[in-house]
Image 1 (cartoon, rainbow, N blue to C red):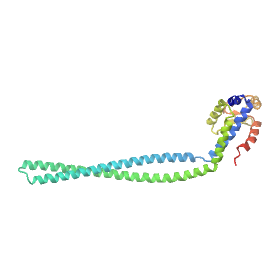
Image 2 (cartoon, rainbow, N blue to C red):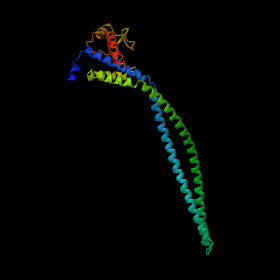
Image 3 (cartoon, one colour):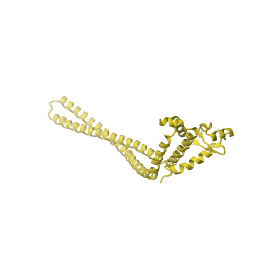
Length: 261
């Protein structure tokens, strides 16, 4: 029944409802525009910090892995030294040169293992030092950005808190007035608004041209707009057109409705 009543209203009533909704939505746009680029700045900072944290975690993981490699090499060196001591002890009790030489080769092999492990430990240590320096720079950058983010969030929260109640009130009014418009027309209105850089979907005429446009509407078309017999779309801007008298009447009417105390 409600949908039927919406569809039964005259074209003039539809135009008035559309312009009323435009007034409410334009005020909402003004409120949000006072926040400027702050919401985007906050989001960009959060994304940047998240990326740097992932990089920092990767460096921490790599440092941990290389420290584990160092510990493994140190354990290998201890084991090799145990074997060297064992083989040298055995050399004292050999019965011939062949056994002595065999043990000497084993000692030499374990000494080479120790040398190779020392070399690897030095390489890992150099890589760890470099990664720690990079990680320190990253951590300092993250701290700096986090401080900046806190400042920007506080700035945004202060702006939002100043207008949040009015915004909530206008959102309710926008929903209330949107229910007066049939769905098909409402979808067109929202589509035009989304495609407009100014958020305007319904505009009046200024010096014979749609507001914000330089293309003058022919006198015959202006008469049709003033008659309010059909929905007229500007062929250049794609916006819904209404006459000046309707604009003035609805603007005066809506002043008390959208006024927020």
